[in-house]
Image (cartoon, rainbow over all chains, first blue to last red):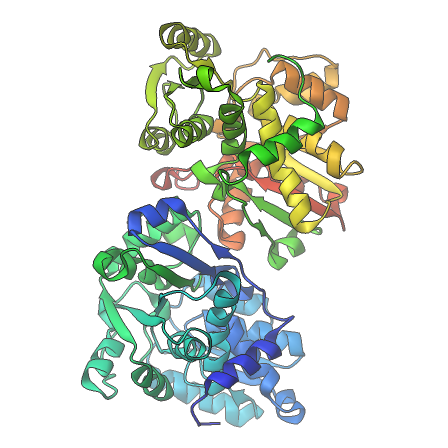
Length: 317
Length: 317
């Protein structure tokens, strides 16, 4: 399937993943609202199965496969959270899962993947090496590739987080999500078009991997870059369908320095009492960096993931 | 008021604090359930205003005062969370608040108290010094003492957390809460007597401040001890009304070593993604230490507070 997903696919995904994915709570904090100057609704996807929103897309992709195809398994390349999510979803359906992981990935994330019963395949930390290893596994096993973010069913699944948020706490005026490859971002755009068409979509992107900002500014994909950011989940290049959907949706990007992301992460831990990872904190950092943009607004945000090594916190050297 | 509070007082407290206190969510984790061998329902009081369940009791006490008395303000001695809670509750009602704090209290907690507009009074870290300073402030200002845990309205207010939990997710078979002075513990006993009379009450107490275990075993208060525990919120001695209520309720105590508490705290952060303080993690540690006691049961637990200095985590030396 290489077509672009549509809003209807998000609704179909919500029905497909019901009972598998956790209906995560929406959290509020008077203290953070006061600091940010707006009313924040946090969709707590770090409490999703696997510790990240990624389970939604993986689950939708796995249960979309016809039975015969599914039996040969699924394969993906992932810096971590998508890998763990796909492993969980495959285990739910009782099919094999193969995950190609780059050297240098976060240990806590690799442990998650293995705990869920997937087979790990290590490769060099380049896009080309990941794709080559994936192709090799596909050829050997007949497994179906479930791309971490460019897959239409993955995009549609990620959109269910915002669909759920709107159902739980009403339509926000501004929705803020992190952007890396663009799975969550594009899914969010689709969900908003269905249930909150007047809501603006703000994407938070690390300065050290700001290909989405460059691409949307140029009106075409600009993905030649060497990622340099603490946000390990946002180092991937913006996908082609992701670009098309975000461009069509008129999404805006806020580029965030790692120092601001780390400060926001610490704030989330201290005030919101939630353990979120840097790739998630970038969205809070974007809001705090743009007070004039959000002042007095109802702002929705996906807390996208909470998989961090507690032994290697960024504020401990 | 020196009478013992009753179950009805918890119901009255729930009505009194409605609209002031946050209705905190109940959290679940499939991963932690698998580790603990039971079904855990976490009442997220670390997301309460002020970052701890303490706001419930303080709020109930403040709004129970007649107008003329309230106008002269409130005073308390507190290692931190109750002080912040009382400050918040007093600010809501627009009355002065004085808080006596011992030297050596957690910096994050003192900052909370001051941010909420209370006047801080420092004293030596002994029970006698706190009470003397409190009496002095009372005499000078006419403020009403709101004891951190032995006050009947405070006890009744703390019970509303469990009342709410039962309403949100049904009656547990076992309820586990930390015990220090016994405000939360005694309030929980009252709440259970009203809405879940068949539920067993398990109290988690640090080995370095195990006066409740000693008192319940002896059938009378045994509060001569020098506290030595990382659980800074549980160093106080069991109150007299608290003892009476817990003794009558047949509460049981699990004594927990600090090392187990710290391990449980780390687990809560890593798996549950919740920033809880040691005084809260002791309850999770108690469950993990007693697998045979909880096996297969529906276990309710109050995550009692989340005020920690991120710069001084116990697993960083």
